[in-house]
Image (cartoon, rainbow, N blue to C red; front, side, top):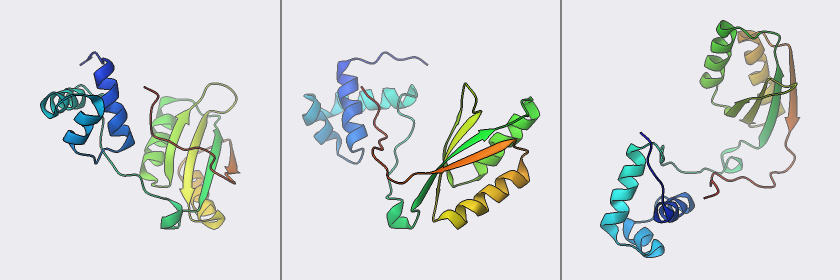
Length: 153
């Protein structure tokens, strides 16, 4: 289902991205509308798949997940069976925050959150035990400069 997004929808989405816990009244006031039209638009955008889910953002360091690794994966396997196994393996690993298939020399990049380097090694050993991988390069993030879930509207 494709829905058209107008300027008011974008304002509503901006408010939801900023803080999805705010009331419909607060959103309506911020976007210059009233509660019922805002609710109808939000419902329409949920049904249309524009709004996928509402969640909370947690502080990884407050939860002891102090190490963030970007993992570059090269594979010599490119058949469908290997790819299905690799994707299933990634989906089962809660440490994998993001996974992207790339164009270029690197096949995949993973964002992995763990407590420390030892925990990363446990993750790495489990990954290579499940799936054949040609090379893996792990890059430790020394400092997070910017992180956002907000899309540019």
